[in-house]
Amino acid sequence: MEFKIKQSVLKEELGYIQGVVERKTTIPVLSNILIESLGEGEIRIVGTDLDCTIRCDAEAEIIKSGAICIQARKLFDIVRALDSGDVHFKKEDNEWVTMKSSRASYRLAGVSRDQFPEIPQFKSTPLRLPAETFAYFIRNTAFAITNEQSRFTLSGAKFVIGDGSAKMVTTDGHRLAYVERAIDDKEAVMDTLIPKKALLELIKLSRGVGEVSFGEDPNHIYFETEGRLLITRKLSGQFPNYEMVMPKDNDKSVVFDLEEMRNAVRRMSLIADDRNRSIRLNVREGEIEVTAQSAEEGEGTEVVQADYHGEAVQLGFNWQYLLEFLTNAATGDVFLAGSESAASDSSDGAAATAAAPAKEGRSPLRITFDFKDSNAQTQMSIAGETTYDYKYIVMPLRI
Image 1: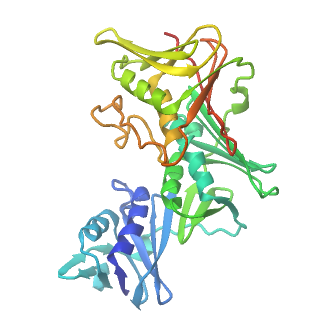
Image 2: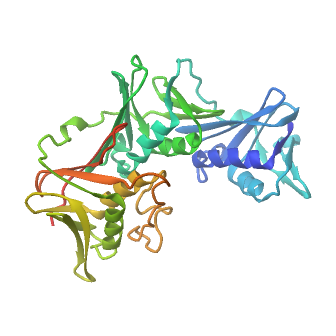
Image 3: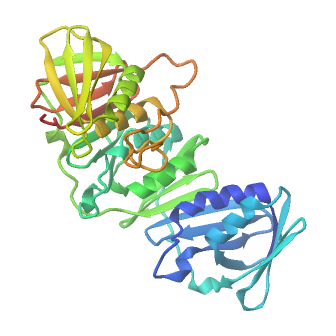
């Protein structure tokens, strides 16, 4: 095989695939990617960890057709360090690959194409949804997926299409995120469990595109966006009956500015007890007093203006559950408190960065908390949202 490709094009496609390539694996070929020719003007790049596969097609000048299988991370590191311009690949004897760009040249070890796993093929007629719908669904639910590997059924999202609507639900047993919206296709039907890793990769693949096509077979679900394909194994098992969790008798509501509350929670998290991450919201006429304390370090208080008329109520929460909800509701990126991308000065995410502000031109977002008392679940939502039915339900933390 021999081909030329623009450095910028190759860097972009390799970047998408890195998320599914295994760096440490007992199956060595899984640390490699497959690059093969498609006709005279295109290559196909594939990476997989056997559970999740990403395939990208890219424009290239094919000099000699064929396939190469090469170490994914090393190739990506080299390509993104190269100057812009053409990158020339040529397969040599014994699976070696020569790579040249401008004045730089490399000779890289490869493996046989026969060792690379075959990816599933699909025959089902695809369904379609706007990419922005998937982005909204994932952004507002992925953070509530459990991180406990033993809770296999909860390690992804329940995705349901039927009766003219699409919905996504996640839970970790302490909180539940639910999003639903009406869709044009009244005949579409699907009910599946999508792993968290696939959801986060889909966010990357669908950014900047108009529509996502998707379908399934008994074991897999696929998503396709403008020359890029994501295939993932479905999760098995019975997802909990989430409708039983949704509160039916919350009779009190408080509305407040998202940005003010997010900043207050972030600041109070710095003084909260590290063991239970507890934070108190004292809801009273016209305001919410946000407080936190630690027996070893002290205490803090901040007041947020709010629309509330009724008896005073004290609500207790894990501050992380609040901060993830408020941050994801405000931004276009998935925020997971405690992750490397979310943390700034604190290793446990307590000093999580103030995420990017709301998009320019958009009115300040306001949040509604519906509750009954300090012992019942609190339901949170975006005030005035009409396109999506979004509910975030959190179990109380007794303080």
